[in-house]
Image (tube, rainbow, N blue to C red):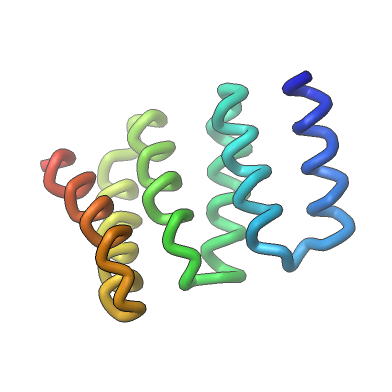
Length: 104
């Protein structure tokens, strides 16, 4: 089932590459399947295309932590804090700040 969902998301992103929600879903599906490198590829693409998509910073940062790329994770969290503060998204900002604080 997971591979079917992954294939469906890949096809949908191919058809609508500018759809941030679909790209986020694909990144999360890769991450859930354990393909962290592919997930980060999608998170990076999403961040470039939609820099205000705050969930990408949190989940991208977590994925980078899993990859052992702690300094890059810190950078993602910091940028996410700035983005969410600018947007007034206090809940997402709080989650990102907590992740940043836990990273040390």
